[in-house]
Figure: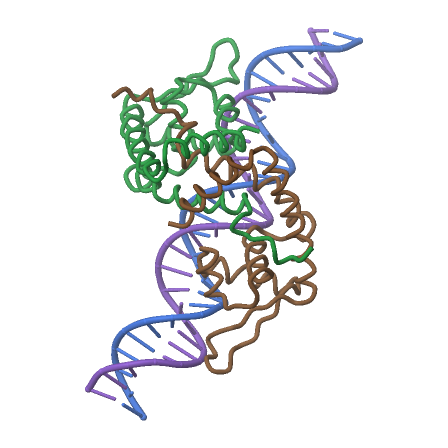
Amino acid sequence: MSTNDFDLRQFLPYVLNRAAEVTSIGFQKHYREKYGMLRTEWRVLFHLGRYGEMTAKEICARAGLHKTKVSRAVGALEQKRFLKRSTQEQDRRLETLSLSPQGQTVYADLSAAARTYDDALAAQFTQEERDVLDRCLARLAGG
Amino acid sequence: MSTNDFDLRQFLPYVLNRAAEVTSIGFQKHYREKYGMLRTEWRVLFHLGRYGEMTAKEICARAGLHKTKVSRAVGALEQKRFLKRSTQEQDRRLETLSLSPQGQTVYADLSAAARTYDDALAAQFTQEERDVLDRCLARLAGG
DNA sequence: GGATATTAGTTTGATTTGTAACTAACAAGT
DNA sequence: ACTTGTTAGTTACAAATCAAACTAATATCC
């Protein structure tokens, strides 16, 4: 049981983190340089743009984000006029969040950039590799 | 070109990040709860334990970490008495870093835990899936 | 040999994140 | 109605990160 037969380069949390960092930095410039957004803001914007209006709670659940992160991201997106809040009548604790027209434009731009970026990443793999990769990552992330 | 045919769940940077977060949190308790270490400290310790003594510069290159992160991690590990520094004679800017006996014990414990943890993760996959996954991640992380 | 440039590593201050306590609205039992 | 509990979201403070400026040692150019 030597300690020397364990290689960091095969330790999944490590390799996943490095791959995530590398690929994230590449995409970051799209939302950061162009719109001054943070990663969580981008995720929140994406969820609203892709899946339609919803409450902060729902975003937390779908995106796997803590409510304080979502709260701050929503505040920042509101300041940028990318999203609107409207308190629900039947339960005034709940706010329905939705993108403004400007937010929708930003979403359209960024989702197109994301697709292009993802295609470039996918070009490194065969179709079969990509299928396996997606399947494995979904299993890891979903649990 | 609808914006609605792009799914976040197939966007590689997003899925990689979620998988990395989920798997990292699971392993975190081993180094955090037991030894009060941070993720960067654990990475530095691991590099020294696995690959032998080296300078901070080399750790930066191998681990893909910024020098400020390494500097702080080295300071923290030194305070915990897990590593020693020794200035090189021929170039006194360089410090050779190496684990103390105590640090080696910690490394042995954590690398064993890492292997167990990784085996549990790997159990979700067939051997072929795991091979493809490792290959793809290495390609993404290495570029 | 002395000015200038590099390099290894550290420190500082601003930004970002995490944890936990907090407010406000609603629900439910008595 | 009124205490108690729960839920949605915010705020406050501590911890962590990032970028840029800094120090000290060495290398290089004239």
